[in-house]
Image (cartoon, rainbow, N blue to C red; front, side, top):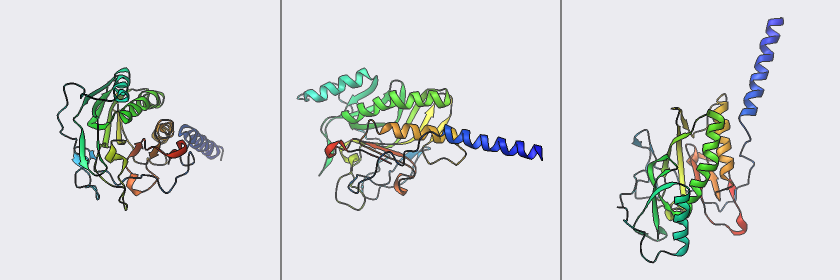
Length: 257
């Protein structure tokens, strides 16, 4: 009887420790408004192969764009774009300028950048973004993602596997362009650490306490940088990735789910 009581006590302590390690839940960080850009299912490259076709997109979002990089910043670049590139260099972002993208309608980026690495962290595949989104993502990666990995796993981050950056497509069920169509969004599928651990963003099992805590932390902290953070548990379209974007909203409203 005494042995059974001790085993039960150990189980209770284990479950309590796991719940504490998991960190705070992001489900109640901010409420969701119906006009949010939830995009559509990403056509991500994961494990070396294409996952899906994007229903509202004639292109495969998982393919990195093949636009050749420019040798120098284009003439007539606005001051805010030049300043943003100073920020990228200060954040140790490896990038190249691309020619303007104009795919018709609301799809395009006037002064796109192609990001290949952030402070030594490789981006796979390279991401095509507006400079502001690239700088925001780099800031989050350096200040939140890397410290969280060191705290939880005692390791730095080797690679961020993204599933969709710029992609000409509409929000599912609407005629309104997704933030991906403006270069304002990035989908993160997997995070590979220096110690060899490969963290899948998909919702972990009940007893994956360390992974759950890590994902909850980086997801919640993302709400301090991005205007939209969505991921597993929100809906079926986001079951396998984090969606980050900087869609501008009135009154500084942000959504984190």
